Length: 167
Length: 167
DNA sequence: TGATATACTCAAGGTTGTAAATTATCAGCA
DNA sequence: TGCTGATAATTTACAACCTTGAGTATATCA
Image 1 (cartoon, rainbow over the protein chains, first blue to last red):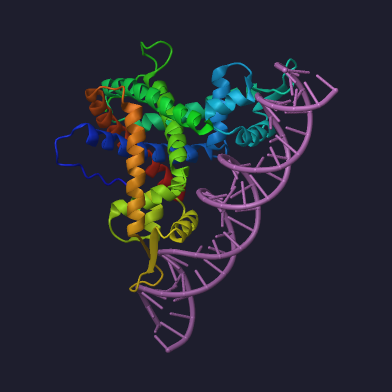
Image 2 (image 1 turned 180 degrees about the vertical axis):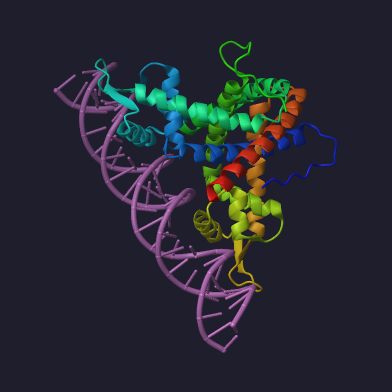
């Protein structure tokens, strides 16, 4: 899957985009597979959507509406219901119906959930350290900044697509 | 081969590894969601595993054994059989039984498949261009190099994990 | 009060994932 | 030749997830 054939032409904007495109495709696929392997271990036994859902809850540090959680994790409300069900079965989060507006269901991470997230992050960090072990510290610093810049753009594209779909 | 010092970092509370970890997590998730949306459009109607499987075939430019294809795309042989079935139903690839070793099934992409991959790549490029539109060319150049460096490390981690599993 | 909108849940269908069992083929050897 | 074990691909069984569309409960507005 790692077949690079670079164009011999001087790199203009277009082929730079192509390089990024290729890198992102491979990174997404590899990162996903790598992380799935980790989450699938007996000590965690989670799926990707379950993890990202719980992660957002843990980061938001407060209770969270189902609809907000669906927006934040880019899942449909119907999908999220199933994900939350399974997380609740494992006692990693709690459902609370809002007393003011009883249509809404608030979700909050349990202590158990926080601990699991913390363990997974630690394991993930070790995996990442292995992947970055051959890079200089300055390179890693630069990478962080550039990734953040790219992330901002990607988030915009995604939002635009989802808003467009509703129109 | 600089070992990253987890303890002595001057960037607030977080270490460099933690920042990378957070960025990669978000990028993986966003990129995956973004790409899924694209592939799900009526004109493509593909899934992620289907795309990456077809992409590898198109890049390898030759016929490919099922087992090699499974290795390259990090899918199990059982999963791959189903994926290839669906791609064949759409006439994007062909199955050919090898005459020398009749146990083996060779897979090859059709002209139709090549055309679809090309269209998807074009659409993807447009998405990526929007995501990177706000970055300077020099930033994009730097990002390419650093992503490649990281990819190399990630591929190693993944291989090690999969080999370890077989042992 | 009744109409409409919002938020969530449920059910069905499709894809992917794993593990274990099966089929077909090959290769070595007496 | 016939036996045996290894290999390649598939099949089967089952679970998880996502999506769509329908349905339910609640809130808001006329």
